Length: 157
Ligand code: 4NP
Image: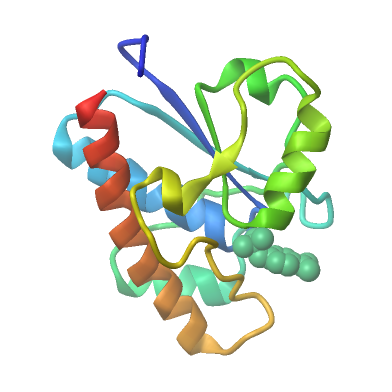
């Protein structure tokens, strides 16, 4: 149940250079097209890529589908993210474990993104980082499917 007019959603992966910035960009465009007022952000549980842009392979695959990741800069999750965002959505179970450890017992409870968006399968958003270019294209298609579910969920309130 969303209690605010303008809910805030945080997408979280490991590096914040592949999956979560992609999902953020897809959601940003689709929510704007759907006329939904929602604040969107992303971050990573790790700190290796803080301040860097999106992975060039992700940039290319996203650009081919019309999403511009060029402005993105990676940041690491902070303990105050749980009070600043209504929904803290993890791409995979490792991300979820890290978030649960950081959260303690206050603020929004992190949850897995794909099931939250109504998807039965896959449950985790596959990490394309160590794979080939195909994996990045599949990430875009999966992000688009999942964002359809996100919009349905936000609309339903
Ligand atoms: P992301 O992908 O979590 O979707 O941004 C990764 C990015 C970097 C690494 C792993 C996954 N890494 O090991 O540096």
